[in-house]
Every structure is written in C-alpha cells, then in structure tokens.
Amino acid sequence: MVPSVSSTDVAHRAVRSTAISLVGQLATQLLRFASTIVLARFLPESAFGVNAIVASLTLGLWMVSDVGIPASILKSERDDDAFVSTAWTLSLVRGGMLLVAGCVLGVPAAWLYDEPQLLWLMPLGSLMIFFVAAESTRIYSATRTMQIGRVVGLEVSAQVIALSVSIPTAIATGHVIAFVVGAAASGLVKLVLSHLVLPGSRVRIVWDGTATSEILSFGKWIFLSTLCAYVAVRWDIFALGRLEGMALLGVYGLANQITSVPHQMAMHATGNVLTPVLADAFRSSKERFRERLAMARRAYIPVALLLFVGAATTAPAFFILAFKQGFHAAGPMAQALMVQAWFDFLQEASSRSLLARGDGRGLALTNALKLVATIVGTYVGLQLWGFWGFVWGNACGGLVGIVAVGLRLRGQGLPEVLWADLQAAAVLLLVLAVSCGVPVLLQDSRGWPAAWTTLVGCMVVCGPVGLIVLRRIREARASLAAHASAMTSAVSSASLTVTGAE
Image 1 (cartoon, rainbow, N blue to C red):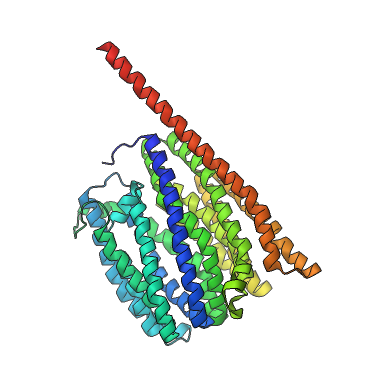
Image 2: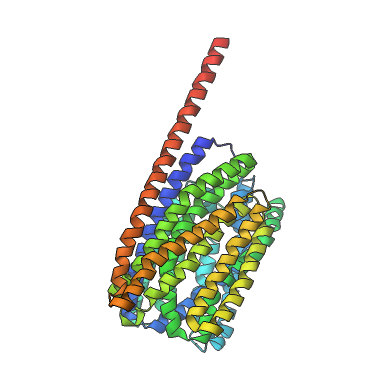
C-alpha cells in the first residue's frame, strides 16, 4: 500500500519537484539547442527533414504501443517490488517488439517519402526505443514520490552524451546519421544509469498475474488515447513531408523545436508533479482533489504563459542570429505554431486530472475527437489557404481538444476547468497579437524589421507576466508556511492534551 503522506509534505515536495523539473528541462533544452545550432552549420535543411521523419516514426511506434506502464505505477495502490518488476518486464517485451517493428517500417517509409536511406536509418533509430523501454521503472517510482532530482540528472546527462556524439559525427560525415547515433548513444547511457543510480530495489524479470491484469486493464484505454494523441500531434510532420518535401519540412521541424521548448518544460513539470499530486489527492478525497487542482492551475498557468510568450517573441531574432539564411523562415513559423503548442499544453495539463482519476476511456475519447478535428482542419485549411491554412487548421484541432477535455471534466463535477482553459487560450492569443502582430504591422507600414521590434514586445508583455509569476510564487510559499505553522500548532496542542490527560 502507498504510505500516507501529509498534505504539507506533499505540497513541499510538489514545489521542490517543480523547481527541479524546470531547471533540468531548461538545462536540457539549452544543450539541445546548442547542438542544433552547431548541426545546422554542417547539415543541409533536408537532413533535418529526414530526421523529423525518423523521429516521428520511432516516437509513433513508442506511443501507439503504450499500455500505460508509467501511469499505472503512478496511480496504483501498489508499489511493491513484484508490481514494479512486472511493469519493467512488460516494458522490456514491448521494447523488443518495437525494435523489430522499426526495422520492418523502414521499407514502406523509404518508398512513401522516396528516401532510400530510411531503410537503414529506421533500424538505427529504433535502438533508441529499445533503450527507453529497458530503462528501470524506478524512474516512475521516483516520480510517484516526487523525488526526481536524480531523474532530472539522468536526462541532462543523456543530452550531454547526445551532443558530444552527434556534433563530431556531423562534422565528420555531413550526414543525417549524426542525429540517429547521438540519440542512440544518449539512450544507452540513460538506460545504464537508470539501473545504477536510482534508489530502490533492483528490478528483475517477474511476471505477476495480478499486476499484469491491473496494468493492462488500465492500459487498453491509454493505448487508444496515445494512438490518437500521437497521430494528432505528428499529423503535420507526416503530411508536410509527403506534400511539400524534405527541405520545407526541415525548416518547419526546426520551428517546431522552438515551440517544443516551453511545451516540454511545462509538460515535464506537470507530468512529474501534477499527476502524482492529483493521484495522491484522489486517493484521499474528492474535496482534496479539487482543492489541489485549483491550487496547481493557479501556479502553473502563469509560469507556462511566460515560457510560451517568451519563446514566441524571441524566435525570429534567434533564428536570424543563430542559423544560416535557409532557416530564417522558421522564426515566423514558430510564432504561429506557438498557438497550437499552447492549446496542446492546456489540453494535456487538464488531461492529467482524467489520468489521476483513472478515466482512461475519457482520455481516449477526447484525443480521438482532437484527431478528427485536426485532420479535417488541416485538409480544409490547406485547400483554401495553402501552407498557412494548414498551420491554423492544426491549431483548430488543438482547440477542439481543449473543449473535449473540459466537457469530460464538467461531467465529472469540475465545470470550472473548461472555462479556465478557454480563458487561458484567449489570453495567449491576445498577448501574441500585441507582442508579435503589432511588429508585423509596423514592418509593413514603416519598414521596421519585425524580428527586432518583437523583442520590444517581449519586454512589454513578459515583464507584467513575470511579476504575476513572482507574486504567485510568494503566495504559494506563504500558504505553505501558514499550513506548516497550523500543522505544528495542532500537533503541539494534541501533545499537551495527551500530557494533561496523563
């Protein structure tokens, strides 16, 4: 059984874990972009496009085979060695099957995109999947208890290895293989370290029937959910690679990397912190669940907004300064893609509530609706307005996802989530219209370069949002201090009562 943890202890762990997650993600993203900037000097745009296809297909294999192992460990009442080792055994079997599937998938991928090199790049890329599957499930156990310092350390170490392998390979070969071998090397290092440095009992091959049934019964809905979510999120990569070619896809993929920085930082924090916090609250009572959800949303929405707006307003100048001419178009693309990324983040963050409540069916249904809306939106947008219509049609799919999750939670007695998410969506659109749209108008009317005037918009907008974030942090610290003081007083009072009775 999961040990009982006080509300104050959970709150303190949540704050500490959020800070560690954000710092770790910031370090990871900085290393990642340092690597990308260097690689762009030695590789053509088409290499980034081919890598986007390899990465999307391997990620797709991983996601569409998801049976909810991490989620099962986070939400289950069990945390014994047999349960955790059974989960690892299932993951290991899954990894072996995916390695074989990745080798086979190289054949149709090479034919569909007319890229013969995918025949051998896909098997190499699939090694990364196997390494991830073989990682110790103690990673998820540490996440469950919000002791994630070493987990973040693993991720930063893996990124350092990826950089140290991919850059020399790119310099030596000038070939897309630099991405693949870097990813495989980082995956291998993280696999080894996950078994050596994380606390807890060593996982081993175990097949506990009860644990298997629990994981797979929940995992069937996770499978459907991740299948729909993956296709919805990666639909643009697959479609553009086929319709527009690898060069445009390479620029578009680089723009997507910019949007992934705030998205991954925010989702990493909510994934490592929000899900275990809400799962712990739901095991306690529905009232505590609702209270912690409201508190968490009040904290993470302003922080995430600051990350997204900061990335959007600095993207054009960043690409001009850091990349060669062929990649400069990625700046305006990144600003438009930030809207879709924000919608995706809001949906995924709210979906943590469904996950914590064990509503895998609702998770699958909402992602299926988003997938349908994304396909229809991108098709109609492409037919009517070309590439930019495709981009905004993709964002419409994200908005449908927000509404779908909000309506599901409304049916579960949480009507405030939908309205709050729609408000947050509107705020980002308004902020980007001021900070990014106005500089474009000034460029058209006065000739002022939008890439540089947008930086002024960054300071104008991010300053007030940053002050809000600081105020929320102070409020959270004050609330925790008051709660801790109240708990201490209650314990002291109880001790005096007992002493008097004696």
